[in-house]
Image 1 (cartoon, rainbow, N blue to C red):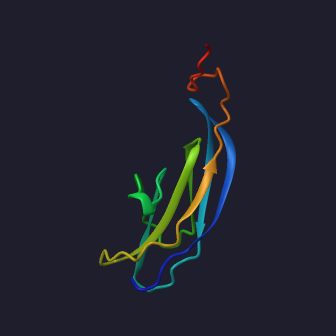
Image 2: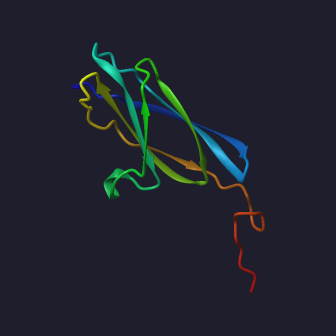
Length: 117
């Protein structure tokens, strides 16, 4: 795996989840064109890779995929992508991108504690 996969767009749309508000984050990337491509691994979490490691990994076994959608609660998220080949070799990380998912639950709504003196 010599060629890197590059993330290029994050789109956020608010949706109502069962336990309050969350957002759908659509991560898109340019496809890897190597003949032995098997799929991608999407890494993400609330901590940048420069400060540690990603908390979550999604293995995308579809070599034709160019996007993945996640529903995430309000916070700042960091994303990076790798490509892997049929032998299991994994590319370097793509450039890291971030998205701020708004927390729209507001004070006093379930899941959002407030302090009243």
